[in-house]
Image (tube, rainbow, N blue to C red; front, top):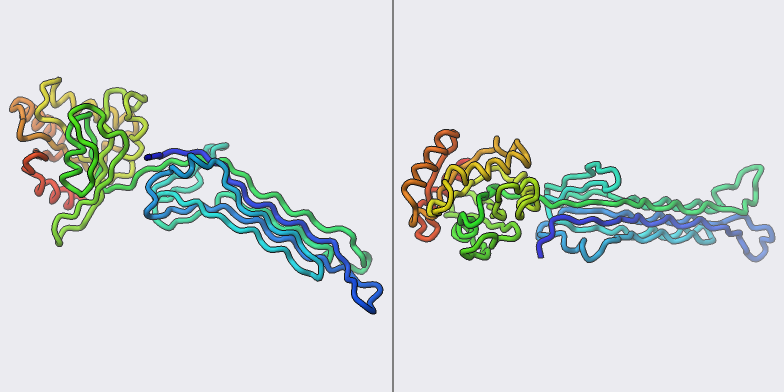
Length: 328
């Protein structure tokens, strides 16, 4: 199950209390104080971990608590520190303070680790409060409370190329031809319900890159129509956008299909339209000549490079991979 948003509560461990203790030794009738310090509470960390692909673990566990520190002991023995806990999330996860809405960290790089809830400091034992006036302190410090933080997480997939287009434009089929990914493919809209990733590695001389198939966009996606708003955030990580348009459809026009997706990308984040982009006419084996000409003209008007492919016959696939590699 793909989960790309989650809300959790992180609890730093409480510090252990300091100890009130006095020496009781044979032949030493008036032993002095010897209470040790309490241990520090554990911290809560979040780490971007390769191999973790979803925030599913956060859904089943809302509260994450680090261990508290142990109380101090007599004979000047300090209590043990509480154990830290590390929450592992996919690279590309963004952390927000849910209370203030402020950005805490953007965990783009694998291995990046950030402390989100500090543990409390352990209290001082009574041995720390001896002075020339107060020889026998009968008190110690309580441990400090650990930090409590409400967190909101958003996963934004890290891919080199993002494939966008209307439902049934052929995005999933293209992904299956470019990589070893096996997304669901069918002749009805919204077969892709969650983003799919694949690695493109064509020959020993080309550098592998990651491509993402994103659920189809429809008019109004940026305002929540269809599945668009749920997954549009994943486009923001992509370095190059591959805009797929169906050349075989009898409905509407190719230029209108192109415009609808462009409009939704702009409404979500206008900066996306400034990314390197490639317009690709798909299903070349069943293309309608009028749509081909219309799409070529629309791409030329925009000054965006244009290609035509057929995932069924593999026409144009090698050239598309070479073009994407060059742009990356």
